[in-house]
Image (cartoon, rainbow, N blue to C red):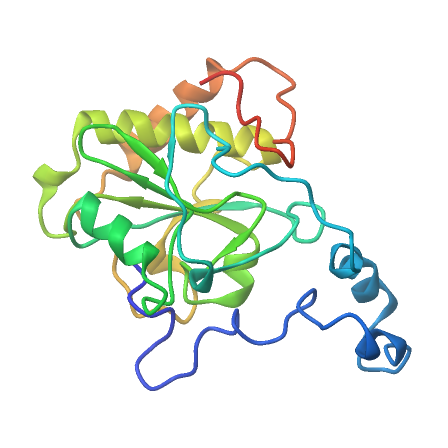
Length: 241
């Protein structure tokens, strides 16, 4: 779990700063013809114009088997992915605590971090942030913008925490995400938090069975119907699960 979204002594990973689409529209946009903003940056600000919003519905999920519990809006940034940021990666985390504890942490605005999903040892899945949006989970702004983060209930030094039900549910979730965004099913695109540049985290740790997990992801992918559409803004999700 991303405890505070930054290494000790450093500023937050940059997600809380003004980003490509986090500029105030109004007086600022009238001056945006300067070198401060490139033309393609301005094109990403459309939903910031008064009266224009990406249509969404409260409580909708991107993975049909998930239960929705909203993370604090202090722990993620509104976006319109993959239109503004390509999604080309899934990042695997371990909560270093209980399922319920992770949910509470992600609901806490002071936590300053959250992942899109949490997978329990019993196979239950809770979604807390839409895949459309940028979650503060990787401790690296670029990786946050281009990834979906999945937390797994347990501790990195307890191999017994990584249950059959957890592996299966997580693999199905990852396979669906990869199908939606055409992400290759390999270890360059499905990675652990420890592999994110600049992070001081070690999860999912030495007991996470990557060979087993990748086989399960690929097996789950073969069960998906071909031509899965990207999730709609209203969150219709993956129809196969």
